[in-house]
Each structure stands twice: as structure tokens, then as C-alpha cells.
Length: 150
Image 1 (cartoon, rainbow, N blue to C red):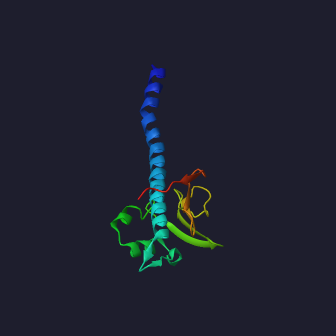
Image 2 (image 1 turned 120 degrees about the vertical axis):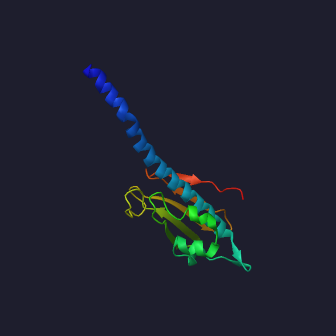
Image 3 (image 1 turned 45 degrees about the horizontal axis):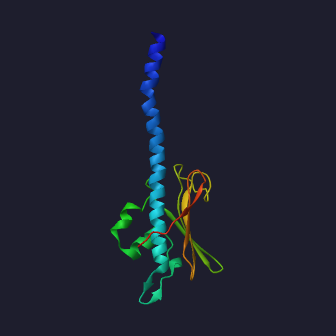
């Protein structure tokens, strides 16, 4: 009888444990999905022209700056990571390359400069070449982001 009760207790607790893991995975997957969307927008912005002049992507200091320039309701869905924190936006120039990074500080909410559980997408833009995007997962895995067909 006692053995039977332990089995029932284990079975009762099993769905709770699985749900927790699934919630964690879902948060990470949702954040990755939003970062992929940001990669799409960064790539679009890298090709954008306003009044015939190439848009200077370096003018944006935050994701809110981008959102205010674009005026699209699409951004309402990707303004924050799964933990309701705004994404971090940074732009740096290395020679001919402009590198845009959009980051989530992950579940722990601590900026670990792309380490720890931070997630980010990094788009490298070189004039005359296709932009390249890499996505870093919460596990530190780096995946190539493919440019969508628009």
C-alpha cells in the first residue's frame, strides 16, 4: 500500500514539474522569437532610405527610438522580452561594419554582457553585402539567422 501511495504521489507531482520546465522553455522561446523579429526589422532598416538618403541606423540609441521612427503597431508585440523588460539596443562600428545588438538580460534580469542567461541577436551590416545575423540563446548557443523573403 505504501509503495502504491508513493507512485501516486510521484505521478501527481510529475505534471507540475513538467509545467515549470515548459514555462521556462516557453519564455526563452518567446524571447528568441521576438529577437528574430528584431533581426528582421534591423535588416529592413539597414536597407531603408528616407528622401533618397540611406537611413543612419546608428542614430537609434534604444528600441524605443526605433519604434518612434517606424510608427508601426507591430512593435507593440516585440517591445519587451518574456519577463516584461525592454530589449537593450546597442550599435557599434568596426571599420566598415556596423553591428547592431538587441539583447534580453534573460530570466535573471542581470546584464551579463551577452554571457550567462542573456539572449541576443546581433546583425552585422557591411555596405554592398547581405546583412548577417546571429542569435545567441540562453544556453550560449549561437545560431545563424536567415534573412526572410519580403
